[in-house]
Length: 210
Ligand code: MN3
Image 1 (cartoon, rainbow, N blue to C red):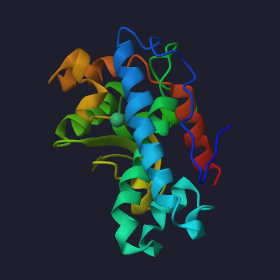
Image 2: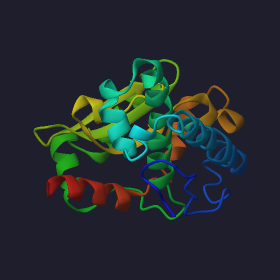
Image 3: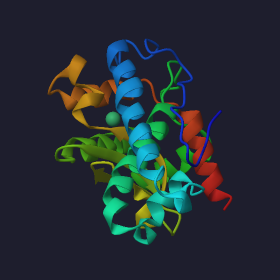
Image 4: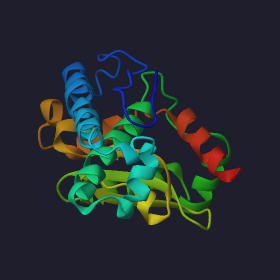
């Protein structure tokens, strides 16, 4: 069962480790999920095990309201809760049976703001390429309801920026190094074959209904 507060679980993937081949290799998905993500889950649980008062807080609240946490655990909660949130999100929006482009209202709004899907893709890839060092590229909705592409470093999230995230890609080297080594651009190009647009569209409609 999925827990959105302490004690957090390693959420199983909805697909097999080899399901994203040939775009992401089986070994990378396995290590990424069963080692990297698991470490974030374990670290977060370890930190919170000594702080009963925060054990009912959701992942989102731990990230958003981090200024209410004791200073001695604040940065490690930001890193590890962010690591869990970002990776759960990332694994959730990939699928082996991907439609190659979004549909519905998301597509309409994307075309309105970026002129074409190709232009959106190119800007998103550029943000992911330009993220220096470890981090993430995101498609978010801002407080005016506009789609925006941003990047964050390390395990930072847009949640603290009053932005509503609907899509992200991991550009830490561990997400692609085994197969692509330093070729982040190739990883990104291939990643566009395994995006679960239905899930992203659903997140977008949730935002629109708010
Ligand atoms: Mn990662």
